[in-house]
Amino acid sequence: EETCVFCSCFSKDWKLGKKLISVDIFKGNQIYKNKLMKSGTFGVKGKVKKIKIKPELVLVVQKGKLRAVPKGTCEEIICKISQGKMNKEKASEKIWKIIKDKYQLSFSKSEIMSAIPSDRIDVK
Image 1 (cartoon, rainbow, N blue to C red):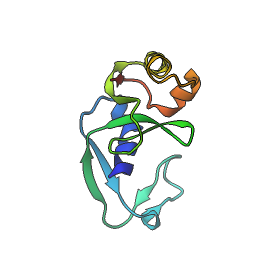
Image 2 (image 1 turned 90 degrees about the vertical axis):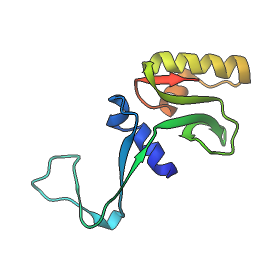
Image 3 (image 1 turned 60 degrees about the vertical axis):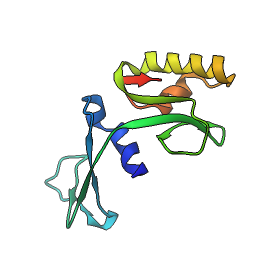
Image 4 (image 1 turned 180 degrees about the vertical axis):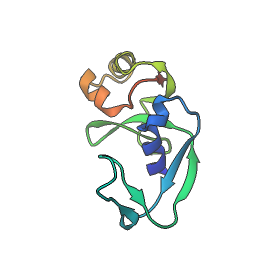
């Protein structure tokens, strides 16, 4: 389930603002590709399990690196990340202030931007 949450938060549906995101679960050996398929697309053979996920992440420090991970991790949570109206630049600025003021940690804005999903973010 954690993998599905992570996938949903970095998906096109996140950008579209969907509150519940459908994630397909299948095995690697079910994937196929043929010459007629467009670049970046693939097919899936056999059964595909679908689950609906509420896209939410938390920002934590793991092994000295900033990571956006699904809720339920044991690390100390720096902030919560969900869908919202902020662009990635404004969200990273807000997170940078939280990290600096509340936790006295030194991460660059580019490190923050690489850890969080793309636009349409809310930070709590």
